Image 1 (cartoon, one colour):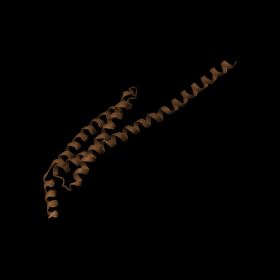
Image 2: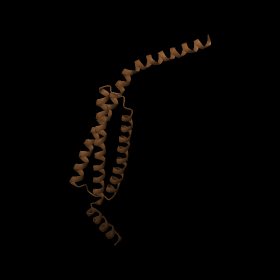
Image 3: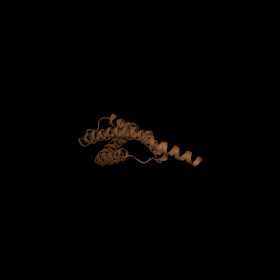
Image 4: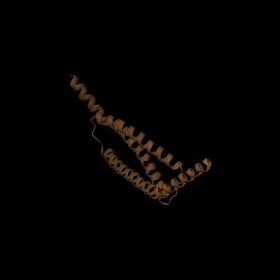
Length: 150
C-alpha cells in the first residue's frame, strides 16, 4: 500500500507543472541577463576597437553584468535540480526554451572570448609604450636622486 501512495504522489507531481514553470521562468530571466551582458560586451568591444578605453566605469559595469550572470545561473541550477528530482518529462516548450538558451550561452561565451582577445591585443600593443614610459620614469627618478646627493 505504501508503494501505491508513492506512485500516486509521483503521478500527481507529473501533472503539476510548477517545477517546469519555475525552471522556464528562471531560464527566461537568465536569457534576459545573457542578452544584457552580450549587449554590454559588444559596446565595450566596439569602444576598445576604436581605442576608446577611457571610461573606467565600463569595467565595473561588465563585472556587475557577469555577477548577474552567475546569480541567474545559480537560480537556474536550483530550479533544474528540483525539476530533475521530480523525474518529470520535459515538455516541448521546455526543450525548445533550453535549446534557445543554449544558443544564447554560446553567443555570450563567444562575445566574452572576443572581448578578451581585443583586450589582449591592446595590452600587447601598449606594452612597449609602457616599458618605455617606466624606463623613462625610472631614469628620471635616478637622476633626481643623484642631484640630491651632489
